[in-house]
Image (spheres, protein in one colour):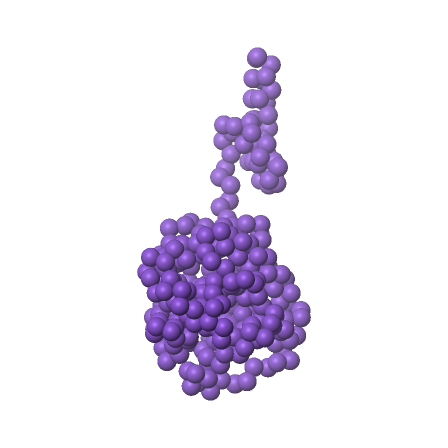
Length: 275
Ligand SMILES: [Zn+2]
């Protein structure tokens, strides 16, 4: 008994000394220190909170999709992102910023710039669009790809990218060559992170929310083009589907999807995917 006690004291003293020299850095060493308990170790350096930039799709003179019973996409997206921000305000590991917190028009490239300048760890653009097939419903998540996952994804990206024209602003044409070089080189890691985050996000949210048949999608959305910020675009549902429109029109349901997205994004940002 006293042998064990002595040995424990000895180990504690050693660990304390190591901690004092700053040598106690590896996870294994910390785990050992904790295992022996009661060692007056300095506090583990807290992890910096992750910055999540949430982008409410459309706004101002660009209404986005308009539902069959008159719901505006820009209102749905703004309400959902505000709710997400409120929910995440209570979580210590995540700081939330919104690209827009009012009904204003923001060009797509401006949204990307806001995320990059803030050094966001992740960028999430929230939408609720429409599809020619009115039976299509459910949530889907896009990551950037020069080649769309299918024709519909391509058309949706085209119509989203036209939002800048809808807003009537005369933007300089994107430099396609530079964009493709950035995508090829600097953006590869960012893109991988976004794809893994998309898979986790769809799996987690899909447990409690209706998913589109093919929920993991890709297309060349302007708003996803930051080469250094993993970016996703979520279609929370289709305003062209009466059932989805009815759901997204209800504050209670918007709170539900906001909470599902917020909680699971916080989990993903806290995972090894983000170091
Ligand atoms: Zn949209």
